[in-house]
Image (cartoon, rainbow, N blue to C red):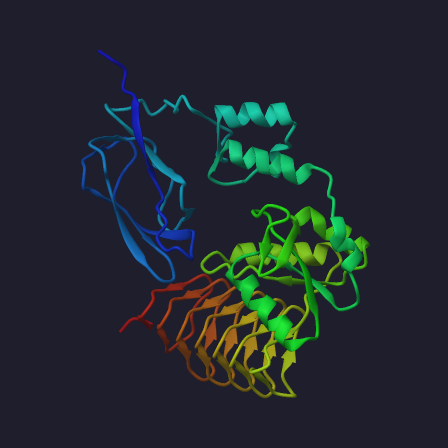
Length: 364
């Protein structure tokens, strides 16, 4: 009798184009169980969307690699599909395992050895691919800042991140006239690429050389909707390089004289920060947000457009409060909580809680 073989994989889909990471909120498949095309395998949820992932195969599930409440990134392998009942000890011939850590394809493993890439420089979760290895090798190469080093001056700033938030910050800075954006640091864009006329000057390795060239200011331009750890990591890299985040206030925003804005706070168009409110390091107060009197907004928080915080609201570090969310007087939103777009919050939201978009918290 022929040995069972792998006929496919079940991959984590991109649930929302702005949120590459999703939470597993329902698991309906067990390791080494029979599955059929159309079976509801998992339910995945972001701050904006929910998706029921169905099987595209008839066969057997391999070892299921996720459990309830895990966070998965689009493209992660959730399990392999076999054409017969698999041996629990079997491993995919195309991948190797290092304990309970990430998997690396054989080609990626060989390439890492060839290029001398330190395993500690590779992703710590998911599958490590040849592209990951090549990216790590490029990061280890010497840094050449080129002409941007000659443009450093007292009010020059560099952005870390070259996505949509970077474009918004570039326009904000140009309109305000207080700083000049001279370059962008991004770990995924090619050096020399331009965003609204601002050149990408390198990746995270460029921070220390930029500091040595006299740069003081780096703005965190990672919006990180649904994946706040990326923004937190960038804030930490900026600080570790001995650099500071500039306070950025769009001209149409209103900030009370008694409000306190920490390094890196970003206040966008039409936002209001009222009396005695505190906005923490690298927090985003996006367009049209109202932060009422005596509110406390923690580090790396993202208050999405149109969110309204009544007086004396506390938002913990790394939380996301989605578009159009309302939070009443004296209520707290815990650290790393995600409150989906349009939700209504009526009571304290514990740390790490996900409040679905359009819902009421707590549920009636």
